[in-house]
Image (cartoon, rainbow, N blue to C red):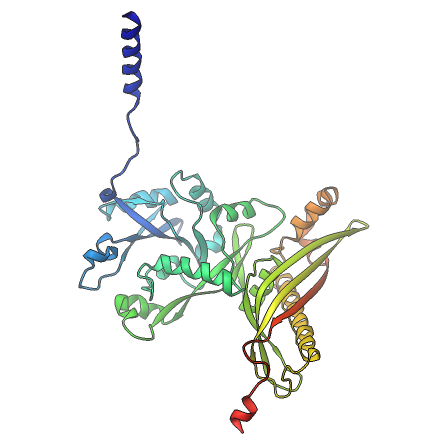
Amino acid sequence: MKAVISTILILSLLASLLTGCWDRRELNEIGITVGLGVDKEGDQVRVSAQVVVPSEVASKSRSSKGAPAVILFDVTAPTLYEAIQKITEISPRIIYLSHIRMLVFGEEFARQGIADVVESLMREPFARTDFYICVAKGTSASNMLQVVTTLEKIPANKMFSSMEVLSKTWAPVSKVTIDQLMEELASSEIHTTLPALEAKGDLPEGITEGMDNVKTIKPTTVLAISSLAVFKKDRLIGWLDESDSKGYNYIRNHVDTTTGHIDCPEGGKIALMALRSHTKTKVFMHNGEPLIQISVENKSTIRENNCRKMELKSVADVHEIERESNAKLIEIMKHSVETVRRKFKVDIFGFGQLVHQADPKAWKVLKKDWDHTFMNVQIEYKANTEIKKLGAIMNSFQKKMTE
C-alpha cells in the first residue's frame, strides 16, 4: 500500500512540472513574417517586416477587393530586436520569424556593416537558417519590400523562388543562407559576396501604384537579381556586373547549368547551354609561394547557330566550337579576378581557404598579409568543354530561309 501511495505522490509531483510550452502562440496571435528588411536611419536601425495577410492568401476566403497578400510594417529603434518587438505598436499580432524567406539589407546599412544583425538573427532560437539574403542595390530594403510582384502574390516568395531558379539555371547568382554568411564573415580566409537585388523600372511609381503595378501586362517595376555585392569583412564595398559575377561563380563551383555564347570567326554567334559544370581548384606551393590552378569541366549542347559559314558538318567544326568555348570561359574567369583585384583588393574567391587546406604551415605566414598576397598570387586557368549534343537539327537553314 505504501508503495502505491509513494508512486501516486511521485507522479503528482512530476505532473506539476508539465506546464506545456511556455512560449506557445496561437495562430491567430502571430504575424507570419516572410520578408525582413534592415536599413539605417540616423544612428538607429529601421526594420521592415513583410507580414502575410491570412484572408488574402487563403483561397476560399480570397477578397474580391484585390488587396495585397502582405502588409509592411516599418519601425525604427536602437537595435534590431527592439525594432521587431516595437512593431506591436502598430500590428495587432506578434511578429513571428520562423517562416522568413528573404532577408534584405539596404545599401546604406550594408556599407556600414551587417555583422550585428547577422549575429542577432543567429541567436534567435525560433528563426530558421534556410532563408536567403540579398542587398538592395541603390535603395533601401524597405522600398524593395513594398513592390508588388507578378506570378507570386507574396513578394518575399517571389524573391526566394527567383533565387532558387537563378542558382540552378543562370550563373551570375548563387544562394547564401545566414549560417553560410556568418561562417564567411568570421573567416580570415575569404571575404563574402551577396546577391544584389535591383528594381527595374520606375521604383517610386511602382511603390505608389501598389496592386496596380501588376494589373498590366508590363509592370511598372519588377524586382531582379542579376549580380553580386562585394564585401570587405562585413561592409559592402561595391558591385560586380553580370559577367564578372558569372566568372566568380565558375571559380567557386556554383554553376549548375547556364547559357552563353561564343563569336564565330567569320561573323555571327553560337549559343551554348552548359548541361553540367564542375570546377576543381588546386594549390601548388613553391618556395612558400602559392600557385592556384582552376579547372572547369563543361558538358554542353548547342542551342543556337547563327554562324555565317560554320554548319556543324564535321567533327572539326565541333572541336573548333569547343576550343572557342574554352577560351571564353577562361576569359570570363580571368576578367572576374582582375576586376576584383583592381577595384576591391579582397579575396572573395576563397583562395586563402585553398592555401590553408593545402599547406597549413605556409598559411600561418601568409595569412598575416593575405589581401596583399592575393593581389599578386599566380593563377592558372584551364577549361575543357565537351559538346554532348548538337540540338534537334544538325545544320543551319537560315541561309535558305532568308535568301
